[in-house]
Image 1 (cartoon, helix red, strand yellow):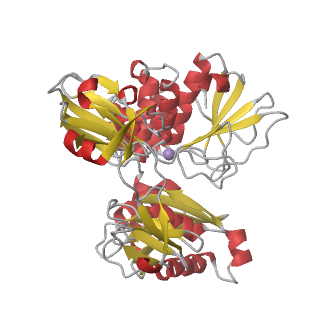
Image 2: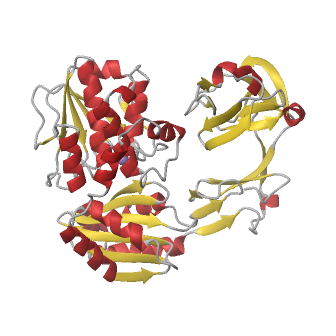
Image 3: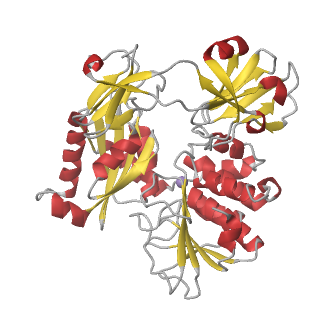
Length: 482
Ligand SMILES: [Mn+2]
């Protein structure tokens, strides 16, 4: 997606999801400012029943002078509608009729619910939509550091979507969090998130609970859905509860906030499971949300009330899955079919090509920051997903064959190396060459027969889940590594 191509549409409406949060507003505002600077008419709107009322958001609009309109239809001259922090057609965003020949675009960081397309930019690896918009406009040469309003709108969006910068995941999120935002502004807003009346609603919801297997289910009085997250953040901290779900009834259905506190449950996967076929759910590993629609529950729920339907889904979830732990399972991989892995080139760069010998460096990658020192003995490997890690030259020469080809794999994030003393940043890819691993790799694989979660050796946070038709695979030579 190219921002100049978007700007060329001329009359653009940027739509936040209903009940906008700081991320939707911040991302939408930054996009609006850039589109205007590129000559387009761009307005920021949202639909749905409720107007923005959360005190921190009202302050955000005032202080950053953000104009956002609560509307029930699009202006007739609209030629492009862009939904930010949400996907047109999804349950959390009003589905406005598009005037005449208008197109739509999507810029979102939630799990994709719509097909890919030219005007669809969805990157679920990013913690906030602000990060995505920032990457988009920075790619066009815009520096947010010099624009107080845009910089703080983006940073506050990221701040609220990452539990106060504590859940930055992607290197781009970390890059954005290093912008020179106004600390006093963010502190003021982050301490103005609930009213006293709302505090009472949250308190009451925590008294209204039941425990279904290891999942705590809390019922709240109808309230601003953002408050549900506030309550579930507390609920998940209760000892013995692997997941806290707080829900409230709304006219159209049940709104849920899902939190996970155990490796065995990914909040986004649980939310998607609970809402499957009757609504939509998703989010991130620890925090997610969802909505179950009343009309679809009455079609499929066999006469159950909405809250009984939710309880049944929770019970199904806790009894459904087979768990397979790497190194501790009893799966008979030896009887499965043998496959040979195709060789894919990986990349490497010599650290001394990038920075002078003995420079203290930080490698910023998809998987986090790694500190090391530039040296003749240290090479940087670039894995298939763009993950970068240091490797000793000796080990590299034993494990890989260098080819003559340049390294040209498309990567989700171009890794950078940062000089820890001067802060200078340097891209790794221009120095990268391709290499192939020595030897061949064999795996055993077979189709799953039912819903399964696989906990691998090398990811201690997330798991793989699959159902009938997906394949379970293990390394020949180490069936523990599955
Ligand atoms: Mn968001």
